[in-house]
Amino acid sequence: MWLYVLKRTGAAAATLLAASVIIFLFIHLIPGDPIYVLLGDEATPDQVEALRTRLGLDQSLLVQYVNWVSNVLRGDFGTSIFFQAPVTTVILDGAETSLLLAGITMVWIILIGVPVGVLAAMRQGTWIDQGLSGMAMFMASIPTFWVGLYFILIFAAWLGWLPSSGYPSIFEEGGLANLRYLLLPSLTLAAPNAALILRLTRASMLDVAREDYIRTARAKGISPQRVVVRHILRNSLLAVVSAFGFTLAALISEAVVTETVFALPGVGRMVVQSILRRDYPVIQGVILVIVSLYLIINLLVDISYRYLDPRVELE
Image 1 (tube, rainbow, N blue to C red):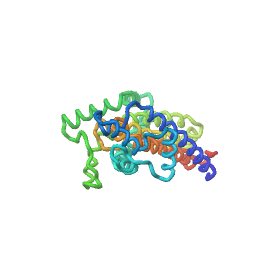
Image 2: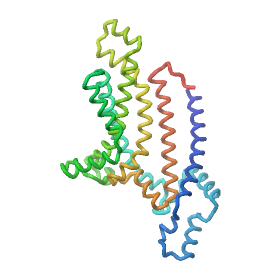
Image 3: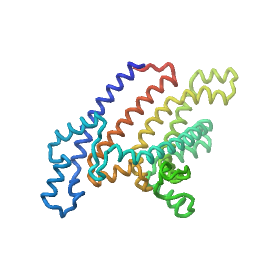
């Protein structure tokens, strides 16, 4: 297995290198100049030229790219043009909100998607199955920002149960009660993803339930509950775990919209603001970190197959 991990690590490094080229070129193709964002339209040509030289933006794109990549290899993602602080510090400032949001969202997805999917599969063809499947299709098809806006309207504006925006850090201001600021955003993110997990769990359960060894287990007189838990659900987990991996990776990019709607100080909202400010180092650093997380999560998901099903060979 270690040989497989080594091969995948090499492939991931090549993917990251290709991604770095694409990220760098596309970001520098965005119309606008960060110098004028910082100095304003009334800056003199001398001021513009001096700042451009100080930030290294007067060099060719090839030189800027080589400098950026060589610094990244040494663990230095550069300095934010807007904040005048290391990019790693800027990313870490928003990491608490984004990581907690992703973690709470995954809990919602698991608690809602898997049990309800199992229930729909065990009640196949009944009104319960049809109702749950219809609800899942509806939740998966509506835009995330629409769900967020209605959650704010109902639970924050009308009922006043939960805050509609912001997030005070639990590490700086203390108190797990601050996590209530993340309940509505996490439910917003979880709604479409839990619906997909529900549909996948149901379909995977029904596929496994048609296998010969399940009929044999039932013919031996094993209780229906044991057949479902020990045979059907366990063997359905391969597809579901794979979906969890992609879902977790997708949450990172989907959080951009949700953090903007709920004004959360997370990495996703930071990306939007950095694009508006043309803060190239921050955009490049955040996207490169997101691509790295995608690759790591996919590798962990593939390795987990081996532990869930010993028949799977990693090549």
